Length: 240
Image (cartoon, rainbow, N blue to C red; front, side, top):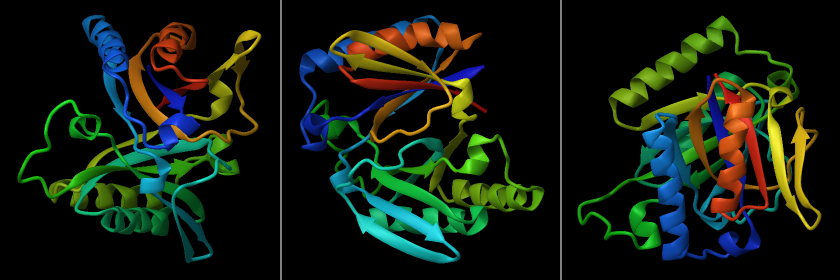
């Protein structure tokens, strides 16, 4: 089973702060340990929401809000990562996905690259970057409903077409939060909350996906992860 461990952002990271060399080293060491244990699948950080776009689709109409965002309904149902020349092109891809899914809210934010945090220079011929298209949870996704066969077929065609052109890189879907767990750093110590999550108003700052036999096993990695990335809140969710 695959689990996603998502850490939430803070005012510090929303200000555009760059992680210290010590933080980068600690995160790298943990991810290396995960890789050596053969549980690491993927992991990314996200840029501040000031660099992103929020999309709301309702009855065929699209509302576009430029960042920064104030945390509102931030419980995710899944995400896609695309490579485009601009955030507007990533928004266009998200709009095509929303046309298939129906009423949905999405955030589009840049994925953090090594050159964004000073680890190495940007490639001189680089003209694109990666963006996460984060799909928000709905009553339907939280109840475990899946897209219809017709929707699945259209989504598959979108993925196939845009993977072929190098735009679509990956898509992940999360199972309902009832099957998840939340960790919160509080003044009284670590608070553990089993799903379902009634709300989440904290923006995602990044994630890692691990292979684990159970929620308990994935949570042991999450307990270390929350300290290493210096987060106040982390969610652990099953990935389809």
